[in-house]
Image (cartoon, rainbow, N blue to C red):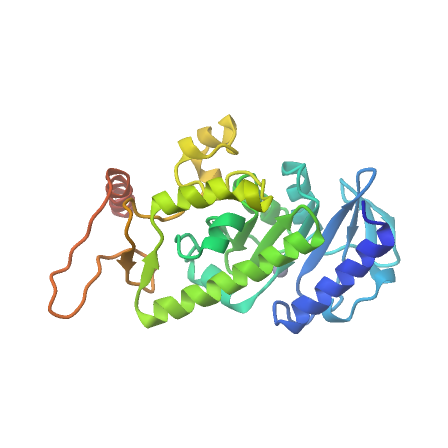
Length: 293
Ligand SMILES: [Zn+2]
């Protein structure tokens, strides 16, 4: 168990890195970690995360009452409290506005394609929580939808949220989200993405244990194959966003479109061709019906 002083130092260091990497501007972002005895250590309100000192942090209880600290806790404290309520396994929460990932959040394009093995093993699909006014009770409500099944998510027109078993694990997931977003953006600018097959996604999921990763069902390639997903999650499929991974052993080309939709591969001189599983076809039909309503 880390001491409180080392956790304060870790928050300072992570804040410095987030600011240096451009994940936050001005006073954006916030970081928190569980202390023993149902207490949280949290960044204070209205402070640039690049210039914090260990004494600035607030200690609160799990209801958000300040127990210690000269400054008030983060304006996004309610979102942090909601995460800790929903996820007893989570020890730390990081929120920032990394610009590429936030661009996807602004465009309404989730990072849900199976394109990078390290993302599939650490985060799986990265959904977008619905837009909510920052610092209000709406934000924890928007986050609640996905947080039981996902360790990382985008916040529509706002930023990103990651959680982990310790501070650095939560922070590194923020790095992974932004890195994933950057690579996805480049691939889409280049005109196509090769998706990893569903079989390979399942293999990666099986390997997660050997990497020491035990968060609940972040891949969700198929709800029935997600051992971490509880019965409650299956009753509410919205809690788990499925990774887009085609069936079959080979890679499939998926040209990137601005609206994030999937279209058949088209190259000059070739007929457009698309192969769909029954599940993908059903999803397309459902989408079409929804858009007609
Ligand atoms: Zn924010």
